[in-house]
Image 1 (tube, helix red, strand yellow):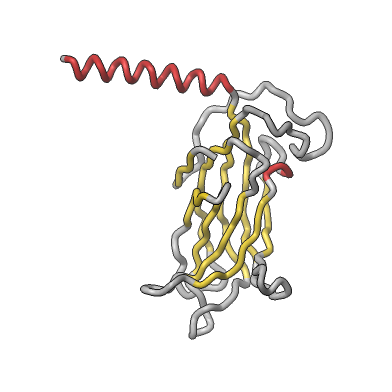
Image 2: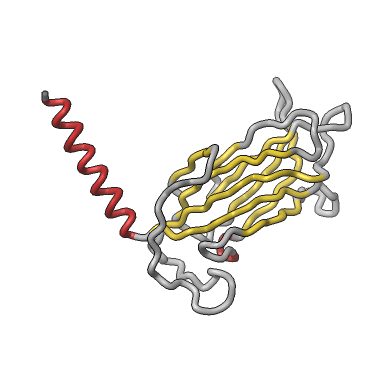
Length: 187
């Protein structure tokens, strides 16, 4: 995972894809571990349903964190006093290893105190179809209480490959930008 960007609208990065990764089945599980390709994961955090109450009034103030490889790559806004929050927030994450799952953790915001854990789940990126929007329902669990029902998080995801051609174009754009900025600086 290299980068993350919170977006109000969908990512508008161009797609150039001509490498066939999976010839049968519906997942990318047979992608070699040494696959040098980059991927873009576009996620829409839709909503939560029947989330756990963590505040005295029988509600929670939930927010969601996405993590890959132990690093936080996205944090949603807080929805106050709601067990069925609607976020409709978009995130665009560049990924360099499909074998690293996306961890989704939900917390209850508590001003001035440590936030309460509300549940977690993970999304196995190798199971996503390339270039196809998928609606995903993740069941939240607490490893200490695996039988407790902590609700669900609904996402929409699209996984698209970012091929070397993009990196070449990006590098050319960066080089020309640096050249032009040097010219401007030397004037």
